[in-house]
Length: 250
Image (cartoon, rainbow, N blue to C red; front, side, top):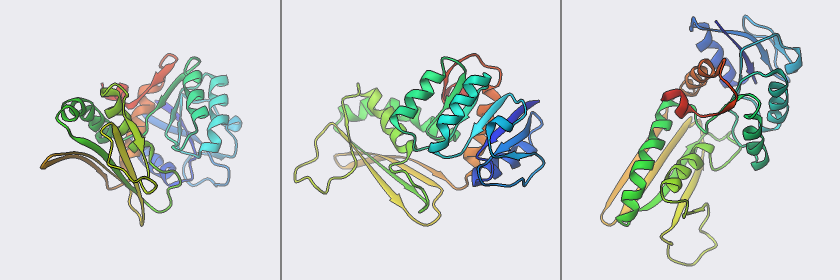
């Protein structure tokens, strides 16, 4: 049985992960952490990680401001951590990698199986289509409560294309201040915020007289929760290192 702490347990994703773990015979949520929440399931909820009992892994769906303390705690306790929180700063991203020298850390921009498979498809398609003169544009859509833009997933998809192209492409988020034709080596990334959209991502390869689009639609946040729980089961007991969902799926 893998013992899990849910960091940010009283949010929407915390509730989803709780439901998934209750149906998974290999996992048990032993505690939750939430600065303002109250107990709502068959496990205690604490305001601080330091109050939690022993566990095998932490699943984090909190806020960027809470990640620094999370990494410090997990490093001290030698506790593997699945970091699902988005909108991290460059410094925090560096901290993830440095912490991975001490413990097992798993971070992916998107925890769904489908998105991670699309990344692999993009890496295959981008060099061939770019050589054929195709432009690359990414459009992401999310609910009106999402704070960061563009989404971490959109950036990860752009990174997958750019890496396959030798990292020679520039990311462009706004063209309103420019009066010029579109340069060849750029990837446009556009963000839409509205309603209750869970998460839509379109990677558009626009060529002469034809367009190829790789799309992913998340109809429920459960897809992210399922991926996070699978990641936790993968990470528990692993040696120190930085892991992604690609490692879980391989």
